[in-house]
Figure 1 (cartoon, rainbow, N blue to C red):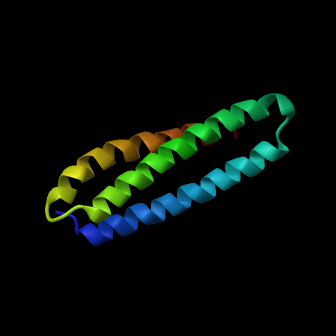
Figure 2: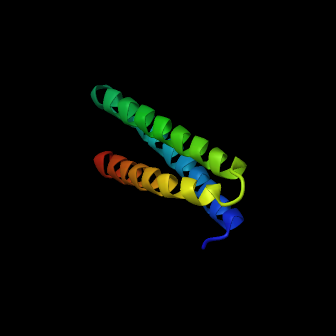
Length: 95
């Protein structure tokens, strides 16, 4: 069983990393040709929305009582994997 505080710290650190990744993609978008900016913007909007969902789930875990956080963790892991894949795909798409 993973310690709740360590788990929250790990997720918080990853969210900060993803904030930096979004900033990096925004900078690439600014340098991109006009015709691909719409693609960047669409991808960034999706990443932000998914990251906001993950941040909300993290908040729920932080506020969960007792062992309830373990149940929330399962859903968070699925969301986390989807978001992680979305970031990987975005960076591959906009190399």
